[in-house]
Image 1 (spheres, rainbow, N blue to C red):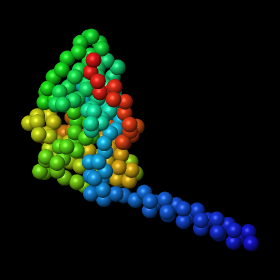
Image 2 (cartoon, helix red, strand yellow):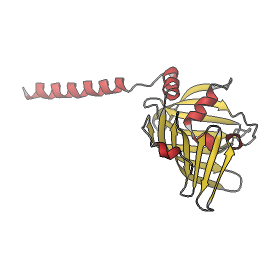
Image 3 (cartoon, rainbow, N blue to C red):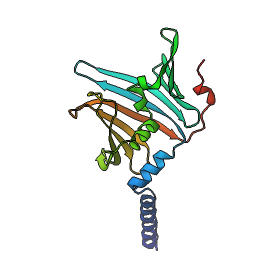
Image 4 (tube, rainbow, N blue to C red):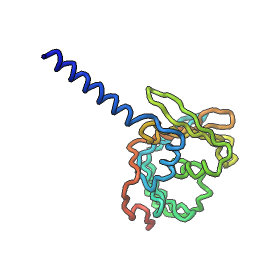
Length: 202
């Protein structure tokens, strides 16, 4: 009787594991794209690592995005960039300055926003999609050309967890396929209700 109970318990555990595995199977390319395209808001941590021949520079950032309100990037504790209506409103606490510039002048920080990357996908004719395994996880990779004619930022690859659909990182390469920038995401929370005051510039 005890043996039957043990067998029954083991069978139940195995069935539960299989059911969980089926519920979290790898998503298709179309499912990944549809999910990313339909994110209406998010907040996350983003670490931007810039690599050049002389040194490595790192920026610790917090990013907020709302499709109706705009985007906000907090760089360290001193700088805030608010993206709204094709303008970037900058607040620099260290210098006490506040100013606005056209969004077209930004050739780096905008790439920290996943929604900006998705927008590039739909205007890019040579976008490539493939799956890669890294550290025991499978990622859907979305590779595209950066249309800025900057030899140091020629190509970008977005890594999206193929099961959870959470963006993991963006790798940016120069025209010789050398890694120049890496943006790592953490604490990514999609479709969060964000405080509208985050997008106000005063």
